[in-house]
Image (cartoon, rainbow, N blue to C red):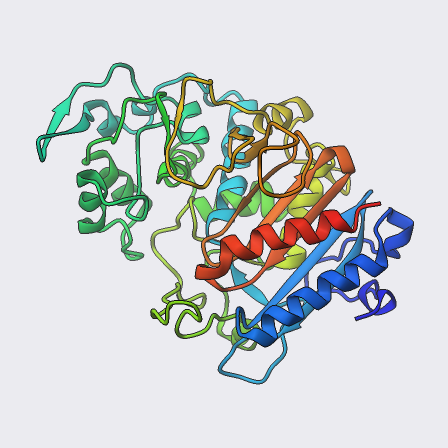
Length: 407
């Protein structure tokens, strides 16, 4: 793909496109962007992934946007710039912005206890494994709204390990898309924490609980609130908890079996309207839709004259909120990184095994989607794929390829 094709203005059917420009005018090397394209074509040819979309924007304009490979490995249609993806945990930054809007509106304070809004959490205990038995001990302090935003709540999920609490999560109905957000919160509240609030960073169901808090405060469903306060103002017309059947020809799908392990790949049905609107991972979107969210973040909270969140509020969200004493659980946070209020944040130029800038913030989705915002370089990137088992490999690869093109 040459630079001229990459910068051609093509819009999705409904979402207004962001402006595009020749990459060299934005300080991006066309030659190196072609190398990036070639690298992903090799991965597609090897059978690593059916197809991808990749967008790189700088200084307020898109310098590269392409779709490669197939949209669905079982069909012949090519991947498209308006293909629809399951974005899973890239829902979390959107919901976190929603919570911080309520903070800005004066409806809640970050230091408040979660139990003020969902009383079932007042009686939670911490599960401590002792000689093979799970002992329940009282909370040293309550879970706060800030804990939920930065994943220091003590909550966990059913994919984060094989301890006794994680096994309880797996045996519960938390994955049932037929329960309500209120029922989901009650189930989570009925299980012990894996640590004392504020002591460990553990990726968890915390943002799902934030979604329920939005419903309680606003008196609206999570989807209604997100549409009214975030998606509609940003004209993210393709982002929702499901899509209509007339969009079946636009759905990006994974291989039926993981190409590296041969294990079956099971993802949500994007055309099925769920009762449970997961604030932690339920949204679907397109590359351009999510790019509009990213441009708003890079602009400091505004897009096309609409301010979604205050500049200083967003700056606080994109700052590290983990005290050095906080133990980091799992492998999701690479060395040289911390976590803010809804985003991972790069704290050191080095340490991580990929290029970047101090102060960049980002997150990803379980099925293979990824974005990052780099204020120092006035840059954002959006990468979309549907390959859960290859997501870490491709995330690291796209970071290296994009930064190689920054002049």
